Image (cartoon, rainbow, N blue to C red):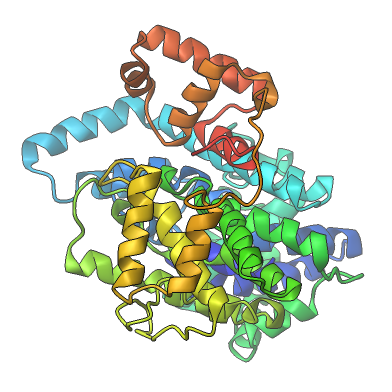
Length: 508
């Protein structure tokens, strides 16, 4: 879970460990309330996982603001309970780089639709977060608190405008300490304490604000002398939960879905890489423990994508050199996050090397993949094949045969390892089949064939009108299908529908 916290730092443009630092402040504030161990357990997990739904609405935020990571990083230190302050940020980012005539139009559009957009955006984050937290097996109090991630003491939060004690006590603690960590880190502890005084009884529970004012200076001093990773792990509520076997696989699958929700073009990518890599590994006779490690590495190989903005991942045209430099960072960020945990660090030789090549032309280290390390070679080939056969912002999906031809070309040129590439191709059906496959006779969730088509397009981020145009139906009919799909699968936002589609292997 601490590794997921680091991924959330990436998504908000924060230094790795800021989420851990805010968790420590939350725990110390919790202890100062004297309310007991049950409260501590909920606060601990809520503080670490507060933004677990953030990838679910990254695409929508980027559509309006461009670099969603930059605006999230900026707004972390602002008073979310002050509509004027929030609106200034919204207008600044939405109009940046636009000509004057477009700026006026954008401002009018924001004034007319800002509230509706904010309600939908934050509801999406909460809904996705709850689905992921439920799969991780957390308690009802943790799930309940996370529903109020974006609410504020004075009722100016979202999506329900809950106020005061209607917001769970644990989340009121986390609201305060997360903001103070950011202000203390970016400015100074003194500035953070000043902000608590200013926002008392508006943004924060006044009783909690008073406790932080009384002890905050000492807590910031204490924070400066700690390794946040070790300190947070030491505070984990007992009994400590160690994951292995199927439990670990399930948790890493949740992490994969968290990663792939970041962009509609990534939906299901990590799951598909894991499945194809395993099939290829078994074809070449890799040992069971190696196959298990490869599957896990494939599930988390794209952790670092959370640190690259959707304005790059979802860009419809060619990337600039500077933009591709940022893309290359994602493999390095994956390595940095996984190496914090000994169990996950063991996956790094495969996971963070998924863009390395046999001729040294890959990234991020420009290594030459060792032909003897078939696991890394298989994931590198799989990542390319799966990527080619999916739509991307700048191109349509390759046909399976065209993707296979490209993989053969790269292997012949010495870019990819030949045995690994051949195994991937056979596993993908370009050769002797591993075993006969059976066609699924019914769709999950009781969805019709047309509803599956609609869900796939919605999961890719298409608007209702775009779905209608793609399927040659009216927008009204498309919306009718969308609402039927949402009702059948029990969701209310596009991001939650996309997550459901990933979980049930509906996305292609």
